[in-house]
Image (cartoon, rainbow, N blue to C red):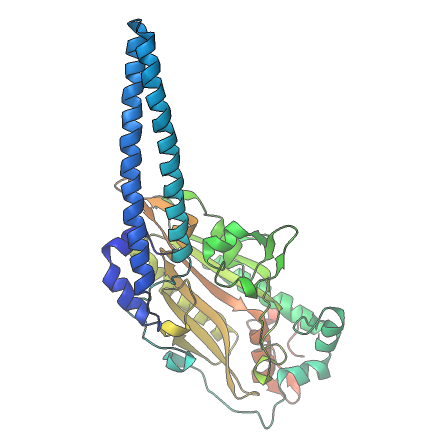
Length: 422
């Protein structure tokens, strides 16, 4: 979330920046400023009260030493009143703190200067395109039909056992999934990312730390009896490793990655755009995460974008990169680049990765800081990216690499899957 220092010192800039998201946060920002001013006034009053109480406590000691017991008892009665006043002031301050946080949790991150104003995906900017966009929708099979014919993905069985959006992968379909995960993890290892196998469930503090709560609470699977959430992405447990952590500047950047299944309710999703693997409630993904000092996070973001480019080019898939407009970005992001792969059989673009810099927004919630060269504690920048999400990658491989009724596996992937065609 935004820091109080930012809000105090950059009020107008924040209001203007968030207007690019189509939001008017003037009332919320001014309410936070008022509450902060009142809280600081209460803090000063509390400090004065505590100082007065300490002075009286010393007086009591001196009076007792001097044998003036009755006079000391009178001062004790006065300190008792000050203790009650201190308790009341602390309670008021906590109320102000809670009220400020309730507002701050509703204010999204401010977009980077590079991010264009806009309301929806129609306002996103195409940064670059790689490969040829061939429309084979009249001659090639969409992945859901091909997967059924080749008996590698069973959507009906998944619906029987669990429900729509939970497919079974079988035979070469399962091996393709496993091989892609290995491929993505090996490439992350080569790029210097340390692999973790994180928990698949998180507590609410972790959800708040990375911004899924309260913003996306309705999209997460929640186990009420344990108050635990199924992870929507490995970003959440991986980034929360550094919650309440003070790093040294020499430890930065931290580069970690992890493979997990991801769970998303995707409430309200329906229609042809979510058919087959296009949108699932459970899917596999390899995530890359960086913790960076603020001065190097732009370069870190560029490096992550380059990493995802390399994965897609290795899979011989045509892709384009979009810089999302402010209105289409996630709640926590300052800047996001989306990768979309061209589906020849569907004749449209499929999103397969988002790479984002959150700057200090998550770090402030996480209380993740680093000690700079001057010994000062500062908030880190956090970044993450899908590298990659499997469902639409599998769909794109099946749809783009059809040849004579079979699917040809890209040469780079063959050592990881153990076969050359389906």
